[in-house]
Image 1: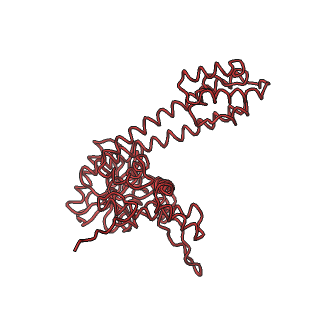
Image 2: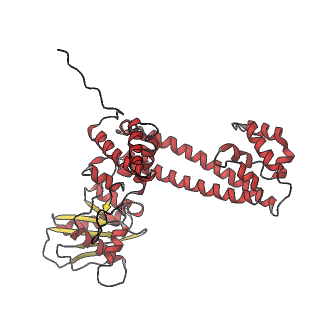
Image 3: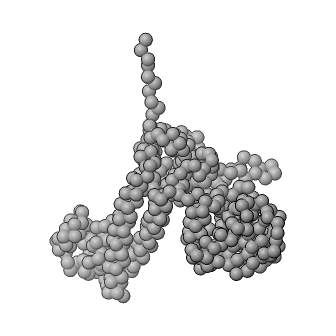
Length: 411
């Protein structure tokens, strides 16, 4: 453990501690108001070592202010963030892009953990626009984990379906075009019958009977479609036997992933319904339990983390930023730093609301009549809905599609 000048007698009023996050070890540098290093240390990513680090940094601060800064807000940083939160320590967060750009402005081209930790601490010292990490409530953290895992499983499912399509093309292109491989029925069919010759040998009646035993809806129609497709190819292609085995495995893998997604959806909805804001969010047309859970996961479940609705809109990427230069003005672009998941949630919910809310439908078509594209109109609607959702959560009020009627007081 490297120590920097332990003989310093001056007690600064404020210190900044930058931590370069790693998988097994972190590196921490503490600097004073002049940017001088007072402490530099490599710390193992375990509770004992991190607790010792926090104690030493607090001792060095000697009752003054101490601001921690990190370049990662999850993964390997989870333990140190949890320990700092338990001690009520303020933690600023620099994104990876901010850190990369800032490092280029410091002397030297070398890269070490100690240098990165110093850059993080120094940026926290000189910048005034860094947000502080706020630990989300327990339900929001659970939803972040569940929705994140669900998204990974959905991506895995898409990859498996694409592999299945590619493999089926090498056996029978007509069958690949005929079957809708995102549905359970065709997937179940391919776990048993993969080649034109196998489908012809089994016949429509036997395939239908087997599908009915597997509780497949529309078994008769599916068996007929598969038989018609198989009848259009009489040749057996090279490698068909091995390809059929791969098709069966891939189809079963997709079915398994579908079951996992269904289980995750149930777990997500169950936890989401426990949140204090659940009924408020789902009352806004376009929000179901899944999208509402993703909203809570992205925002931490507490609007107090945002000073205004404009800050929330900026976090969601729905507040255009100017890109003016010279004679060019009024050039607005989406900000580069925003939460992609939150933007997706607001965009999808706005798109759904155009079919479920008269006001959203009217607003969308008004924007289209102004010359906006579909995407631009939906983004404009999403920005408007941020204002509505903010007000609903602020006032603890559910959504009403039309303004309440004004009561008439009898004379």
